[in-house]
Image (cartoon, rainbow, N blue to C red; front, side, top):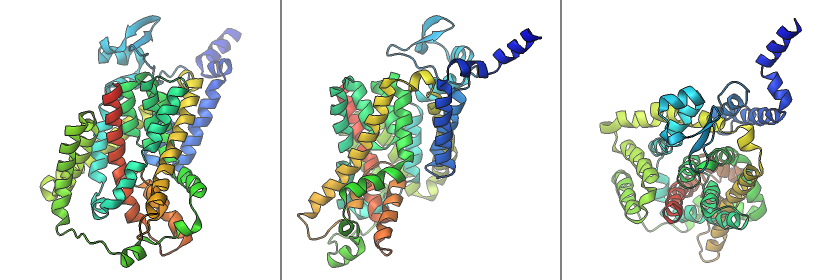
Length: 411
């Protein structure tokens, strides 16, 4: 009888959890992420799949955790080292499990990030940026965190490729971070993807924190509509629809000529936007890109990225360094946008609310919504959402171009 009970106990996950209590830490992390996604509603479309993927990956015996290949693509399969890129997909599914099949087919190949960018493009309206082009420069200034943390990470002992993958978290763009890491440091894909998406979800916490450090009440009370009335723009867009159609075509062409390695992201982003702006003639393509394809891609990306967060992959000093460095990159990117606005205001009569600089991230449209809520706290009539979107949208383009530059130089 004792032997039966012993076997039943060994059959459960309890024996493994008792032997390795680190699983409890991972469960706590998964539950916290689920709480933030469900209760706090911090990017639930991303955080809920990621958190559930973390949970699935850390049930011993479930074989749902992603086994990360090393720098040379080698993984341990039944006690034998194999090159995962030489294994057919059916063998990966049979030997490593369902989650590894999804991960190596859709994520590690770099397939899903551009697909998600296509959906983002289809859901994005470039109108606010085109109407306020001068504000788009703050999206470029907000890329400061990427390059600052890159240098710091190199000094801390990361290789240049690893440092670039860490720094790109400052762009606040999960697909861009994944795409860059796949190209430069694929062995760090798990912790970098988790850090990037977690900080994106925590935008409502991080932006107010950084804003309180740098901005005064007077600066946060700058009313953009009043500034527009005092100093009206001299340029007038006569046909916005035509401009919206031409914009993705022109941007893709320019980026392709100067930074070809950014084309997979920028090209798909602009294609998604183009089918949206053309209208009824491409409505079916727009619907697919923005709904079914985007939703399926988000599910597979989130749950498989979460599954990379196993005890061995996450609970180590390298991952802790990535989490700290990612937060620093994020905070510096927000700070860079704010400080550039403050400098800009020194030389112009038409003042700009620093919150517009704070939204030069790629977290669209959450960053803009958060900034708008902060502005309304200081002045209930100060709606800055449309102005923030100009900087926010340009941040999407800026982070993708920055990723392309890093891949070109270091890839």
